[in-house]
Length: 321
Ligand code: ADP
Image 1 (tube, rainbow, N blue to C red):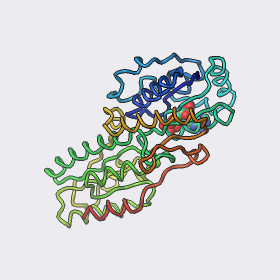
Image 2 (image 1 turned 180 degrees about the vertical axis):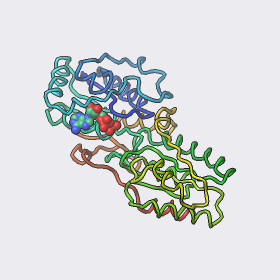
Image 3 (image 1 turned 135 degrees about the vertical axis):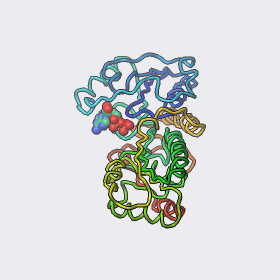
Image 4 (image 1 turned 120 degrees about the horizontal axis):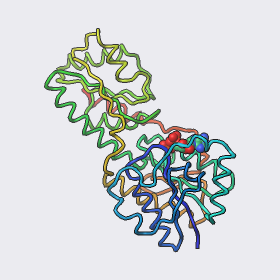
């Protein structure tokens, strides 16, 4: 019989709870013991964990956030701090760790794995910037929330001949902005991966006006070269045809009720993590690729950011006619 630990780390994402539940129940089904770590790496360093029974993870599927908590723990970058965590794990008889989180969290997991403690990750971040899973837990829910906001803003925009610059999350990755832009029918999408000058944007908005558009919806990724408020300020004395406003969606994108897609993804990836451990695999991130649960070594995941598809960027442009 084995004893494993599970934690959630970094930015919370809708579906993390479903992933904890899946790891827990999949492991219990194998006769293993599961320890839930409170507050991410902070709890690992403090030795703050408790056993999770099958019933302890009930009623969680529909809840956003993470019931284990997810504190930031910058100290975890220090080797002596990780050593303390390692000592706690070994003293508790824990043989492996599952880390549910995004880029930073997987980097922390890789560091622990490099010190000889079997660790593996479950791909979870609303930003979808993590290499190793085509889509990560939380993205679908965040996307749907962004979309709902865009739909609402468009209704008011069309009534007043306004333009909205809507800032969505995604850190250095334009995925969320691009997908929300296509699904929301944006006139323009600004992503970090593609360079642009404010004057080009003003011209593109003005062009939409000349084409007879009732509104201008511009989706701006948070990591884009210029943010929504800066752009609106810059456009103040430019003629774009529309009266422009900035809306920053921010953290409302995080707390949503996980969609069916995110619950299913989390359920599958959580079980995939336990399957991998059962086969003796660690040092990887468990993700969804081409419809199949698969593993990618930490070495191919950490220190990278997923790019966006040029074809989809082109599609967003073509469909904005
Ligand atoms: P996310 O996982 O969503 O990208 P963060 O970047 O905030 O979130 O990372 C979450 C946590 O992972 C950090 O608070 C820290 O404890 C740990 N972490 C991040 N980078 C490293 C690193 N280079 N080495 C060790 N631990 C790290």
